[in-house]
Image (cartoon, rainbow, N blue to C red; front, side):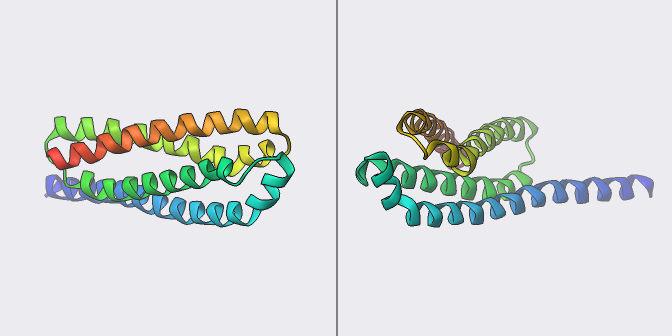
Length: 153
């Protein structure tokens, strides 16, 4: 009897773990949507203040789309991961998930916090842009790897 109860408890804990991460990424997607709206409202003023063209600011929209897509993939990857029974496959999959989570969180912080500091002068904005582009590259690379992994298995 204790064995059955223990197994049920473990299954419930596993479900809670995956659901919490699913839910957290859903909240993050909503946050990214707010960031996108805010950037859209500010883009003309930002271009004027930093003497840039709107085309030069397109990387912000691209970064938000990559972040939103990464969070969406992460969100659903927890549903997929919940049903992986092969321990080796699950361990590899979780490593990939952790990488995407880490890189997308890094990009989220850049867009949410560092942007506010960087938008005041062109020097800070240039280094911010480089950091965002590097983070976008990392997110895309891992995201593409997750897609290939899921399609393979």
